[in-house]
Image (cartoon, rainbow, N blue to C red; front, side):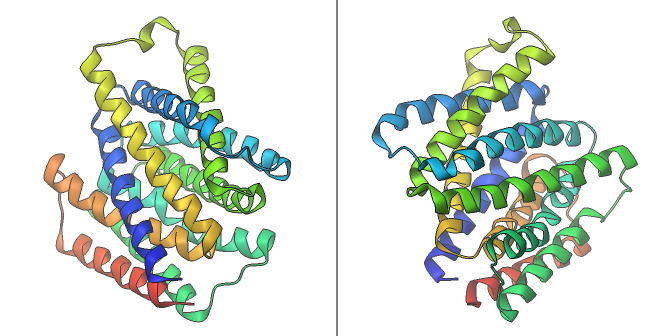
Length: 278
């Protein structure tokens, strides 16, 4: 994977950790996630007239990804209800690089070279080690965190293939995120009501900014997966757990132990191997 792709994916990792910290720090995470998705939908609606319509060959992947993203949102909100960012975020992200590598091999006949595969394994092991530092995690929280990881793996492979079939990765990003951004508010209305969506302007602005960071972060990843191997790109994106650990320590008052720092270094080593692989 080229240095340029590696660099932009690391930028996406920082953005991804930031909006997850914003979500974890909120009091009503389902509402925050819904406002994020509304911001995503508005931004994509404004961009849609200026980007190519994806090829019809990618429409099925686009629709499937939008549904998978809603499932991911609901599982992520449930995961953050009890667990802290530094523990649940790594579990949710840790399973996905291996799942994406497996999915890419099965559905796209894409096998990483030995160096990249070693990097993927190091990233995954480091992430899992991060998750299990400190206090134990409840079985329900663990189940939802692992379920979130499965959704991440599923939508990542779906989008990696869909973007390649679309004829325009940017067009695919915009139309998929527009679909997802519209589905999430509808889900919120079904689970709660429409009236509670509107709140204080400052709250909506903060949540909306998190949505725009999320859109930019995942847009970068989809472009990277359309240009490079899906498994290593996914693993490199998950270095966001290192940034999440630092954000959790600085802004949320979570503990950053020596063992957690060591696990972060393992993740970083894996990221270096991925960057030099292929």
